[in-house]
Image (cartoon, rainbow, N blue to C red; front, side):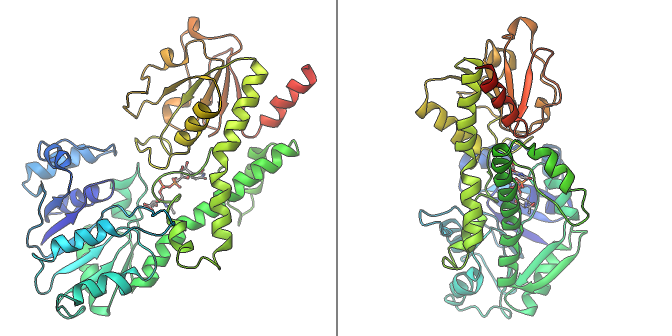
Length: 423
Ligand code: SAJ
């Protein structure tokens, strides 16, 4: 089997390499020449455990190459980004241009799979007509499938193999063709359904998570108002066999949870009330964190602040839709603090890679990503301001040097109340 993968990002690249690892000849296509050059020099351009080794293996075996142009193949997988438009709906421009670029090389009996996250009904209302307008009968000449990606960044190489996979075909024959492609390496269940059910299921998985995180974020605000430790409440409630309160934090980021619910909202604006409200609650967290950073800095009577972590979650290098960026923007625009930023996973000009330099004389350290490196914060002694405080918004810091006090979202109320007593 020969496959073309359109888009070599966080999903397309691991998927391509996984097919190649299982004996499939893969051509990975991307519009970015730098990405093509890097991959053909056997160097991955994103951070994902196990991916670099796997690339080396498949290039060595002659089963993977990167290219700017699609080639005739048995199957085509589209894994390009689907950004959000200004009106919150799904921007299909990259999906459509990927489909248009494969049309000249597509031939009878090919399977075309869209993995990119799309709004419900996109396959039926947009993608299918595109192929039909070129004279193809779907389910007879070509097989068209939506097979949403559902792997967790940071654990992609494992989840690609062991997760269940939804194959949403335009017809029954399309489902069978799609299943055949993924059986190459998928060990999980392959569930066959129609395209629109697959589209909505994918969006609901991330919406479920977003709504549940919103519940915990709202609970955090309520508990701090009522002087209750929200983290203790969550731990207690989760002892119940049918309760799974999620973790509160500085907001919801990444290209999935912070985007996908809008693709449901945009198709049912009047009806999707709870989903919209949850988005609003999660979007309000950066300002809640900003407000409390101000409170804490007032308490320690300081203005020197160090941010630890800018990625949307721990142990990844992805900063897309990261709440940390919104918090940094707010802090820089609305206040006159001295801000230093450290992240061991991100290389950008404004990032100080040395944690000791980044925290030198800081009054307040704010942890915004739950990287493993932040579990135990060890700073050089002469680097520590004696009143230095750590505000851990992710509840990740276990130890932070003897003199450092740690405040979490659960103990904010307690710490800030102490200030009132002192005054
Ligand atoms: N977060 C919380 N509290 C939680 C869990 C997460 O605040 O209890 C935050 C994270 O810090 C992050 C955001 O939510 O900012 C999203 O993180 P995540 O780990 O929930 O998910 P993603 O975006 O990395 O990956 C999700 C996964 N979806 C589900 O678990 C339902 C993944 O399986 C999907 O493949 C991926 O979206 C995707 O591509 O759609």
